[in-house]
Length: 566
Image 1 (cartoon, one colour):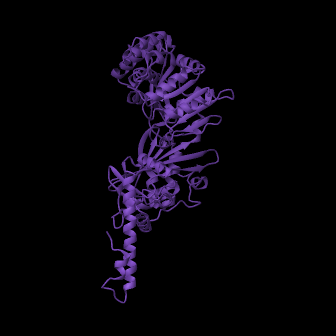
Image 2 (cartoon, one colour):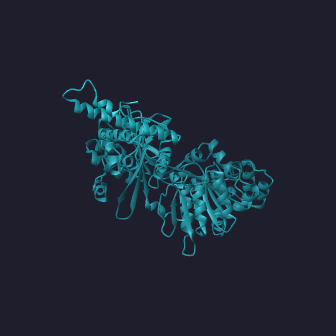
Image 3 (cartoon, helix red, strand yellow):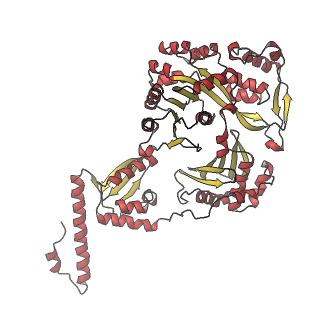
C-alpha cells in the first residue's frame, strides 16, 4: 500500500523543494486510491479492469469512436486486432453504451471485450485524441451541379478522346468529365480503382464494364480526396470501407449518386452508382413481356392476394420489374408499402421503408411491422430466410398481395428453393400466383444495325429451341417463319461508342401456378426439372426461347442471348 500522509511529513529526505515532492506524492496516493476503487468496482460488476496510463493506444483503435461520443459516454477503444476490439469505460451501466457497442459490432464485425477504468485513465486516453489527424468535414458549396456538366454537353466524350481530356483537367474537372461521360453513355456505375501502375476509370454500360481511361498514379490522393469530399466521407479513413452519397440536381431530374469505397493493395477502389430518377418511368406495359405471358401476368398482379416472385441473379432487373408492377397497381384505393435495402428510387404515393440492420429492423421484423399498417400491397426487397418467407406467405394467404425477389437461376428453381428454406408445402402451393424468371440483355444499336448470317450449326440449334415453344403459349412460329429466320447485330458507330449495343431489355419466363404444379408441390415432387416440364406443358415460354424470339425481331443478338440465358 502507498505511504500515509503522516509519513510524508516526516520524510528524512525533505529539501527546500519538499513542497513540490509532497504534492507529487499526494497525487500518487490519490491516483493509487482511484485505481484501487476502479479495480474493486470492476470486480463487483464482474468486469475486467485496466489502467490505461502509459498504455500504447494506437490511432486506428482510438479513432473508431468519435471524440464527442468518447467524452459524452466516457468510453474509448484502446486495442484493435483482426478479431477483437477492447473498449474501456467509466460508465458500464450507461444505456447508450449498449447501443454504441451494438453499432460497433455490426460495423466492424469483431468481438468486443469490455473493461472498466478510472476517471484518471479516461482523462489520459481522451488526451490522446489531440494527436489524431482531424477529420475534414464537407464544406458548403463543394458539389457537382448542372452548370458544371453543361460545359461538356456538346463535347465529344468518346472513349478514345476522354483520356486526353482527363489528363489536361484539374481535379475538380476530372470528376465532372467522368460524370458527364457517364451521363452521355447512360452508364449505371463509375469505377475508379488505384492499381500498381496507374488509375483505371471504368464505366458499366448496359451491364458490361468498359475501360475509358488510365490516369497517372500521382493523381490518386487528390482524386480520392475530391470524391470523399463531395460524398461526405471521412478523408483520413483509408483502411476500412465507407459508404456515402451526393445528389446532382438537373433541370429534368435529380440524380442520386451512391458512393462505396473499400481499401485495396494500392489505395482504394471507388464505385459510384448513378440512380437516375428517369429509370423510374419504366411502365409495366414496356417491360418487354409478350403474348400469353403478358396477359397472364397482368391478370395475376390484379388479384387481391397471393405472391408474385421475381427471380434471377444480381443485376438481372428484378427490382425494376417490381417497381413497374407497383406503378401499375398504384392508385388512391390501394395502400402500398415497401421494405427495401436500400431504397433506390422514390415512388410517389407509395410508403417506402428502409431496412436498418443495426437498429434490429430487418426484412423479417420490418415485415411484421408493415402488416400492422393495414396495407393492400406489400413489396419485400428480398426473401433471404425462412422467417421472412413464412411471414410473407402468411400475409399473402390473409388478404395481401405480396411482391418480392429471390435469388435462383430460373422460375422453376424458385419452388424447390422455398422448400429448401423450410417453407411448408401446404402453405406454399396456395400462396404463389406467379414467378417471373428474368435476365437483362443488350439491345442492338438502331443506328448501325445490320443483318448477320449465322452458320448452319447455330441456325439448326436455334430452330430446335424455337420449335419447342408450346402451341398454347401463342408465341409458336409456323413452318414458314422458322424457315425464314433472320438475325442482326450492331457493327458499331459514334452513337453507341462503337459497342454495337445501346440500352437493355428483359427476357422473361412467366411461371403461373396450375393445378398440376400445386399437386406436384403437395406431393413433394419438386425438382427443378419436374416443375419446368409442368410449366412448359402449361404454355410457359422459357427465357432462352423468349430471348431468341427477340433476336429474331432484331431487338438483340443471338450471341447476347446465348451468353446470358443459355
